[in-house]
Length: 231
Length: 164
Image (cartoon, rainbow over all chains, first blue to last red; front, side):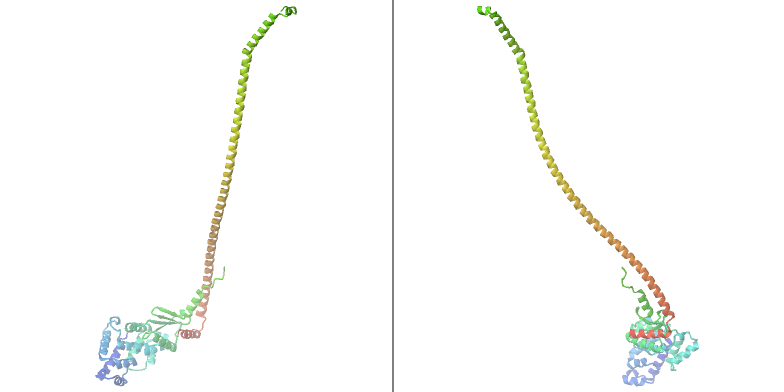
């Protein structure tokens, strides 16, 4: 699913590296200066700014293996700075963009989805186009599951699911994501509508539930036993 | 002698009479007096023996009577003691039985109480479950269908504030 994105990103990174053959021997400040013109998301600029040449090559091999058809679970992604940057991007900027999409987005016709994707990702870079394709060609569940798996493989990230009785809205989702990302770094909180909750919300983290829903409260109230007063 | 003869008394006849009387007396003594005397002695001895025997029997009877009285007294004493023991035993047994009955009654009452309590609790629980189920249905129906969208949206924000 992320192959187009990785391809586009590698294209940009390798193009940049070929333009600056001495890049990895330079100091951080010099790297920062050169990276200003590179059209990739900020986490990858930070990555390039700090990564060593050996680690970059190693990450490159991992990415190429992935693009060659290897499954993520088969690769030693844990500790990879590149994939950590990928996660930072997807759980940060991209996740915010994703949260801007309404629930009805995935029910829209293909053309409408493209328009909507263009609205939230305006850039015309290769990476941006790959991201738009990602949004248009995949469902929210598919994207979220892939990122969840990647997070788990790279940093042992938590599986976070937030259920709300209706769409929580972009701002609240952003706030929730921000807070949950601090609690569970580099995890990708999934948002899901569950009308059964009636009100409030519910969070599942690695199988543990924190239930703030009305449904849970009603259940709690209706299962409360009154004090023994008869007798 | 002649004088006696003149008086009409014949001394020889008198002698004969005397001899006759002597003989008669001797015969009588020998034939009658001695057997009668012997009979009388024997009779007296027999009576004496009977009297002695009666006295002996009387003594014996008195002795036996005394023994019987003594035995009776002892028996009465024993009987009294046994009766007392029996009374005490009966009393003790009655107390034990009463205690056992009290324990059994208490136990029975406790079990009955527990059973009644359990049954009461079951009934209360059933009623509570029914009421709570009904309340749940009503509440869920109301909040699912009657709560405005903006209230639901607000509830998410409120819950989030609570989470933070």
